[in-house]
Image (cartoon, rainbow, N blue to C red; front, side, top):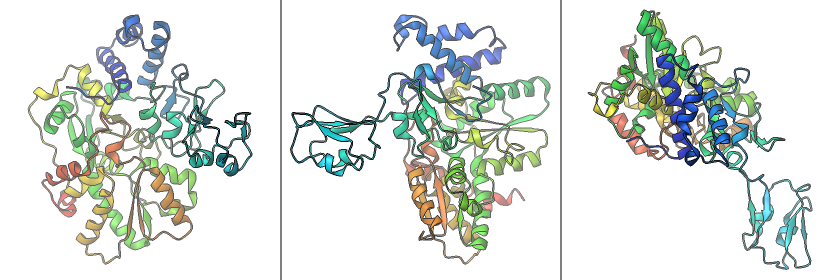
Length: 473
């Protein structure tokens, strides 16, 4: 049984499924209205003020499902007409204010934004308030609440604000495409654009003309998804879609870990290059540390490069939990190797668009990587892998890793590194809490147990990094 965390995810899946179904059949252009009505068949299906607005919003979702605004380079976009039900945000005094005479809120306010009426009830002057939150922290009755929008609260890089039309607005100079806002928006008004049509075109061309082989490279976090089927059945389902072969990105992780161990020992200090949102964050907020980022491609880029060099008639599609990968594959140094990116949400939509019930399929095998490559899916896994690579290469280095779980932890470590006071020599940066298993493109975010990732790692045939990558040489 398909499992989604929210009805927003379910709605997004339905749109993707119908778009994919018609794209495979070659009827997408003339079926736009049919798709809209299939998602919102009548007034009883609407979640908005009226069926007309609901269908207008679904129409915008279809646009994003077929690639979104081409002039907008960001893969995260706002559906303005869907973004109208959230409070404007900011600190507000609630009815819980007792009109006390201590006035702690007034004393801590750095801008004199707190005033009182004749009953001693507090009021906040929005023109003066700087949203520091000091008043809320000292109120003995918890009477001051921060009505920040969920997307703003989720965005730890402060890239979201409210535009003139009261819809969310994304600051492209700060956004790292991590997708936290996408998952947290209760109305689905912020979402990631899809490249699902590009993938379908590749599969159809490959089937009809045998021009090339289309490879699926799957992130190790796939082990936490598709809970209604076995992993081997998921692999069979991917091949049933028309993919020539399915390769573990974890094998690329083995290759990266091996190379980063040697690079770290040579340079003395390094930050990881595996999480594109983390690397993007360094570029935008800590440019002075860019020379400390590992020169290696991410595991996705590394394994894709190997496949392209081995099979010159190949096309590569990454499948994983990450919206930021949709930005990474378009970067100049990655684009030659990765042709498109799908999330697990989109993979589920693809499977169902072809009526492939994976739980009924025979199990195929996914066994390319080592234990250490597979544990890249969770926070701390990369650091464990680099430690192992140093050991296997007999490199004598005093390894002191800092594993950052979430972008706030990344910021703290990078800030200390920029000031030369970080008590470590390797920063493992993961923008999503829990690591890749917490990515915005997951089917479910409930499966975030690192022990489950480690169990999946233990199923790897190759137990050492050296054993995993020696077959590539």
